[in-house]
Image 1 (cartoon, rainbow, N blue to C red):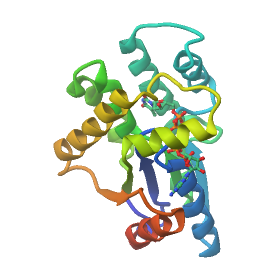
Image 2 (image 1 turned 180 degrees about the vertical axis):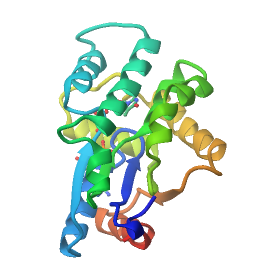
Image 3 (image 1 turned 45 degrees about the vertical axis):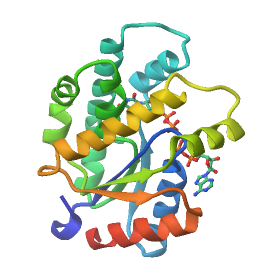
Length: 210
Ligand code: ADP
Ligand code: TYD
């Protein structure tokens, strides 16, 4: 999907925790504003009701089964797409480009650590039928570097922020990209570089959608 028919583009950033997704989302938004392209930054889990519930699970404040967590992520995503106040679909239909920090590939990569990836892809079929990203940008970073960055900048580590987990998550991302290569447009950007260089690589990949 792109804005050639007056719809906004939809760009999703993906990567392991600490890979630089939020930094690059912000830099892309800054670039789009400079170019005069109407745009909106968002993220998953959302800060709405279901997203808040998920954050409580991620920090260990409430406990539930991993399958239930995967279903919560799928529900949060549908709300993110469809809710009447600031849903992604209505923004895109009104010509606004949406940049999201995580979308369904995060579910495929993270939630498949605990269950078959096919199940997770199926659980998100409604979202993929409603809206596939114009482009998914995967910021590829070495898990050790990611953990160093997280350790420097956070008071506590969340559920997935352990090396063995990040290695599995990265493998799952690669598996999902391969599995869905016919349906999805994905670019992998080397994230082990200064942020300005990464931003340039992101813009080179994304500019064709504007
Ligand atoms: P994510 O959203 O993927 O968790 P962030 O964008 O929050 O990642 O980045 C994690 C930390 O690493 C932040 O403190 C950020 O300032 C820093 N950071 C981001 N990009 C780079 C980079 N290219 N080089 C070094 N540090 C970076
Ligand atoms: P967040 O705190 O935004 O990640 P980051 O540390 O990259 O800034 O996301 C919380 C966690 O949620 C993150 O470890 C990835 C995980 N997650 C899933 O397990 N499934 C999903 O569908 C999404 C969107 C995120």
